[in-house]
Amino acid sequence: MDIAALNAEFAIPDHLRFTEGPGGLAMIEIANALATATISPYAGQVLAYRPAAAPDDLLFVSERAYYAPGKAIKGGIPICWPWFGPDPEDKGRGGHGFVRAWPWEVRACKAQPDGSTLVKLGLADDASTRAIWPHFFNLRLEVVVGATLSVSLITRNAGDAPIRITQGLHTYFKVGDATRTRVEGLDGCRYIDKAAGAGDAVVVQEGPVTVSGEVNRIYEQVPASLSIEDPVLNRRIRIDAQHSRTCVVWNPWVETAHAMDDLDDLDYLRFLCVETVNTASEVIEIPPQGESRITAEYRIESLTPTS
Ligand SMILES: O=P(O)(O)OC[C@H]1O[C@@H](O)[C@H](O)[C@@H](O)[C@@H]1O
Image 1: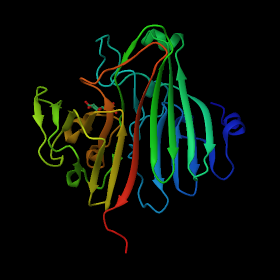
Image 2 (image 1 turned 180 degrees about the horizontal axis):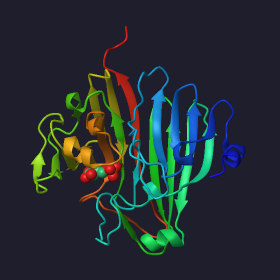
Image 3 (image 1 turned 180 degrees about the vertical axis):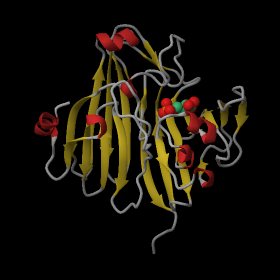
């Protein structure tokens, strides 16, 4: 992408500009009165978000992440679409869909009256997408960077036959020490245990979710609000979801992190994924010319009240 042309069309003075990031990829850098953020049009991926006065970023991005066409960027908020998890048709296509390793278009950048910044990215079908997934679509990502971070993924079925998708915001949250975090809000929910050796057992969650080994679970019928309590970073991350009743909690633990070339061996301590998704029994069918939306809003709160 031509950085000068993007800036000429979309830059907002003292607020938003395009820069050349790792691997020569264009990056959107936002700094408004409420927060800072980095968004990659490649993959439609938020890579950083920090509210003003917050000491730490919301998101984890691996120091060993790839920034190259055809590769997923490890960290931030990868967009999994039009399938979440393994290829549903078993055709050998990669996990979590293809748009997380695909160039998206920048469609709009706007300073809003409340001081937040709205970025709209999009991706429409063409011959190369239809060679992978033979459907007509218009996919939009709307990111609002303000006192909270809001991410909406909107799918329009641009064809004349229904389409079926699963999808997810595969958010990598930065944590001080994964073994000391707790995910609150899932007590009593059923989950499918996808961890190695668990055999997809269906289990009922008791109490908060903690990490003391590989965690790879699809929770069903989840409430709209979840949180991550992180005593090391002294913060709570609130996640408010819309149009999602399934949630994946993932931490790779030692062996899987070691096996991933784009993670450092100790990164399993540095992040926890709590993913706002539609997956498992929650398959979304979109009628011809219809739309479907999934949204998550993230907010950081201090655990120590300020006096
Ligand atoms: O593709 P990434 O970003 O490495 O994430 C992979 C993980 O993503 C999680 O959503 C899945 O539950 C895991 O099974 C999978 O290993």
